Length: 280
Ligand SMILES: [Zn+2]
Ligand SMILES: [Zn+2]
Ligand SMILES: [Zn+2]
Image (cartoon, rainbow, N blue to C red):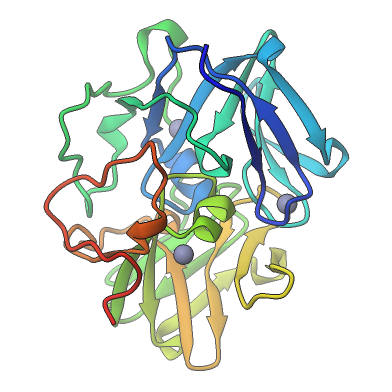
């Protein structure tokens, strides 16, 4: 066994302790549901035994969304972070929530056939086109929702929110800071920065809940039904999580920022610009 590690959601309300077996590895899942829920290019999670896991706080503020038959996705109702999912004698831990090095490393890509075409997988890890063999059949969901031709379209996991963007982004960045990792519970976030005048809500704006981390300006938007990350539209700037998108924007050459606080278990794929903090 590895050493026990702690983890919590962005707001800190939901917290836990877990010990991973040395046989476990981290799954990087590229399915549409994971991308839509976390707003990232892929989710990052590992299985632990239920007996090696305990909640420290906040179980009562966990909300769940039935994303497919017999499968619930859980999130913090206050800050929207994806949180551990318990089931039977196992628990799935979203790795972005961890405070320390869990001792395990990425092992494989799941649902590689659904990987976001704007950031092709470029490392040497084994790839499974869909679910790993031990899961049996687990079909991918592909309900993109209504899209407007010629625009960059996107939406939520639950389908209540739809939006489109009328012009290319002004900037694209992949951020590895600890707040971003906690808020999306994955290795890093990937965001489009756009002119707010080019952002249009088609439906569901009223479902977006905003959360600002105490004593900071770090704000996150999420769907109050499914917990999926939402675009943020401020005067002068809008930020759109790449995981929300149904259309392809090439984000493969965008800089990775705050790599100085990168998750110890993650290695950035490909030869892309990396900065300890920001490009300056
Ligand atoms: Zn929270
Ligand atoms: Zn997935
Ligand atoms: Zn960040």
